[in-house]
Amino acid sequence: MDKVLDSDVNKRKTVIIFSILGIGALFVIAHFLGLTESESKTLSAFEQHQIRFDINVPDTNISRDMYLNLKAAIAVDNQTKDVLYCYNAKELRAVASISKLLTAMVVIDHYQPDSILTITKLDAKRSARSLFRTGDRARLEDFLHAALLQSDNRSARALARNVAGSYEKFAEMMNKKAEEIGLNNTVMYEPTGLDERNCSNAADIVRILNVIVSHYPEISNITSKKRHSFKLLNRNKTVNLINTNKMVFSKYKVLAGKTGYIIESDYCLATILENADGKQISVVVLGSPGPQTRFREARRLANYAFNKAG
Image (cartoon, rainbow, N blue to C red; front, side, top):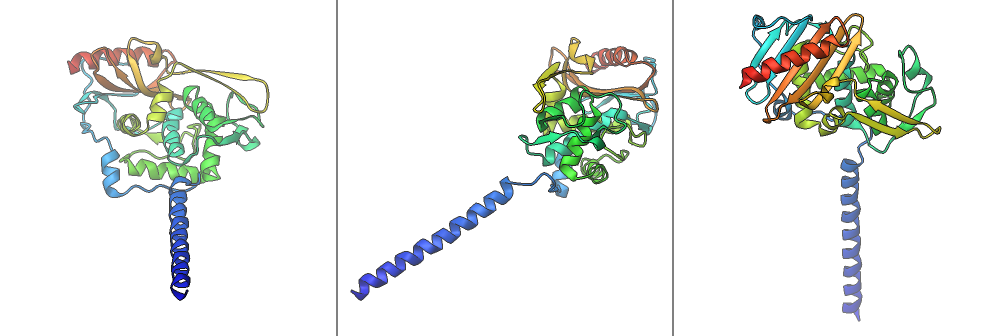
């Protein structure tokens, strides 16, 4: 009888032990799978090295073969990392909404895709033209499309606030991300690019583009689209987005890209293009005098770079 009792006790102990271990395992899994939207993901030194796209930009311009009507430009062969064209590629400039590429990277690092966001009065303040009213609600993924495809500033602010709680805190996260991926000439003050103090240079923007293509497929996928549509959750309206990067309608395949404009930056474009042979070229044009001029000059630079790359 005593042996039977001892056996029952041992069985109960075993069940209790495995239950405790199971709960502990579930807690660990939940910790890693259930990261909150404000938790930071700090990369190790090795991870930072792996994610970076290192190029050697010459100190002198490589631009004698072709004159472009802009303030700075660069074209890079993505496979060899050879700089095929550069003009003032290390010069710091306001980059306007190209800032949103870095914004999107930080959002992707921290977000939960099924989150629902609401545009607040703070998001709408001095935001330039927008597709959204105060109180509009949509999925985070759709606001990310709006920020990247149609450069909507209210969307970018809502995304930043959702991740960090404030625009200022989010800017700190943007600068930390810039440091992690090796951007030594990039500084951000807010998530939209409306602040002219958001500065970078053509060389750093090439690095951003290539990190996106290699490590952020969500951003690459969004910025290569021609269009995207979705319905707001608070009112009966369908939002139709058209990519502001008109290179998506060119003969080249766009792998990533973003436009930008404020008075201080003039018209800008950053994009990675692929030709019919599968050759990939990064093209950045900054400080173009007109909205169409940047695309014309980008096409000229892309044609030149593909021919030179062979």
